[in-house]
Image (tube, rainbow, N blue to C red; front, side, top):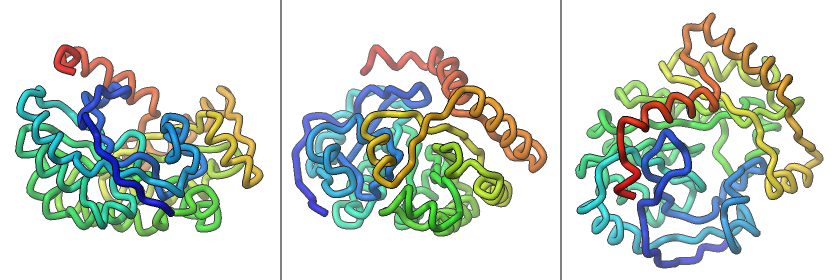
Length: 276
């Protein structure tokens, strides 16, 4: 693993996802090295080429962000959209925490998605600002061998479930990103049913998504013998199957496509684009 310190000219960026007004990525690259991750194909240079081995750290991000919040209109900040905000380098640099300490008192909302239990290091901050934050944990399966194959550098799924329990008990809104699902790899009932049980116990909403082929992710999966080409009929049947189980459990569950449609409708009323 190699860590490179860089300087950035910008912190907040226009989000490509409709549920967020801004994206904030303290790091480029991700040491979790997940083989299915779309972010590799959106990360230029060494961090993308050597996915899971090299991370660039935006060491001056807090200073840049402190200037930006003085003039930027408060909105929803996705943390992070092309990297994990709580990957191992956060233990040293604390850029995610320092960013939250700037954003939340300034009236911004933060939506955090991670695979790391390191998010619990910031539980004090998240508790104080629980009316302005939500935390999503990605869980793709509880089968240890499959998880290690797909997510070689990420914390074990059971540890992520523990983080959900802690956060939800403190009143922080939690959700589970159940995906990406890959046909024949992690889409069986034995994969998703235990995750839905955790969602029920923690009061977490569930967002389902399928693997979306991209060159970089395809090559990483191919390296471990996985060829993933999800078709529409498989996804329609699988999402209905999981949503039916969610309904039985009383768990709020929707696909990423449904989430995006709802977010686009909500975004129309927020009028952020002119400020970005």
